[in-house]
Image (cartoon, rainbow, N blue to C red; front, side, top):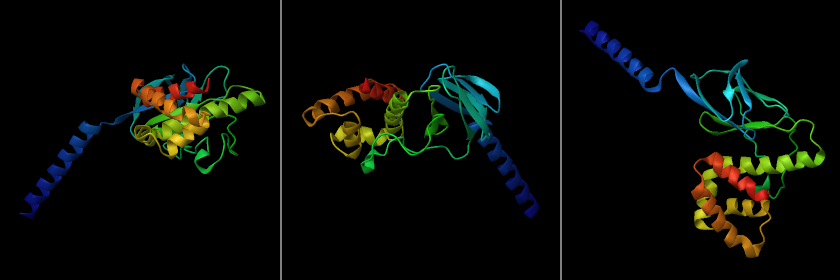
Length: 205
């Protein structure tokens, strides 16, 4: 009897394992976006394609993910290791754009499961260009990493995340309501989180 039960358990285990493989598969999508379209993306020295990129890779694969583009400093990071999710901005605590962290080669952060955003720094930037880059990428990362909270605050017409946007985009108090309404429209017109972030960064121009 025990032998028969063991066979049933074994068969059930094999069946479930097979189903898991069929459902999840041995590969997973990897999405890499960058502040530069057409940047080359490498995994362990193998060219995966150019940004914006979505490609299937071995599930749970580790290695070095590198992104490079002509005229920009290259960036690399260990995939499936610690990702740099630090905010480029520290506005929630009253800080300003910029950080003590060295952003000379850019940064990468995870904004969705298996989705990454890479910010490449222009090669040999001037001080003014560096400040402008940090300013734009600070806003971009803030919008990407706090998308849901921002949308919630926009719907309510108030909140700390809206306050950050107001400060970051230097909106005067008399123009606050109009700005919030415009950002709601920007979100409604955006098809993806990336597009929403790009449209918000365009507000700096």
